[in-house]
Length: 287
Image 1 (cartoon, rainbow, N blue to C red):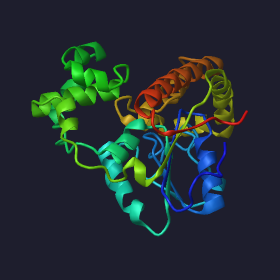
Image 2 (cartoon, one colour):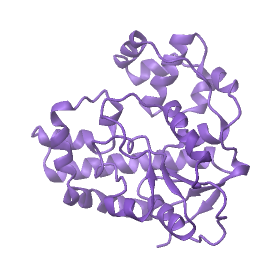
Image 3 (cartoon, rainbow, N blue to C red):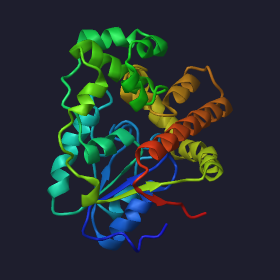
């Protein structure tokens, strides 16, 4: 990846699919030109998962300052709105932010603005938790469906909850969005375009490295607190590791299923980034 054309005086955004080398790129930029690395990954905010979510290691964190990594308990509520409020003061801090991650919604909220939607009442959330993805999807309007990943339950459920709680479709709320905190013209916005076979090869080897680094121990430490309904417990690989600890999967089956889930997630990310970040600068990883 060529870093020579990245200005040293502007915020940098780095989006890309899982396992595409985003974090290392952020570190290289920070070490070359300075800056604070800011997390934009919905799973890496939780303290309980460092290895499983491929959070920066302690060694990585010694190379440059990092923010919004592992700062929440496993049961803390968190959304794009929470993230946007936390990232706002970092945009005007003493060090330029290098914002990196794979949660596209965070980047869109930052660069395109985010609708100020009221919080979902607990009874509405409880009702949605009991519904199937198909039932939730069936009640959404066509415009909202066109804007979100309809295979992502969390996104579909959020859209349904907004509709039920406010009486207005999510798309209408989005159309009333205030100005963004960081418009694209005020930063260097990069998206990693990883070739499919190259990325899948990296994913296949990733889980074995995670197991060697302590992923199973992380899962075992969380076993008594595991709740599949919590966002923190939906991190890729966590359900498979928990199934292994319950004796339902062998190590080999756990690795295979976790790798498949990761590849499926990466495919959804690549599709989403192509559709929603077509104007961002493209970076192709080095072989």
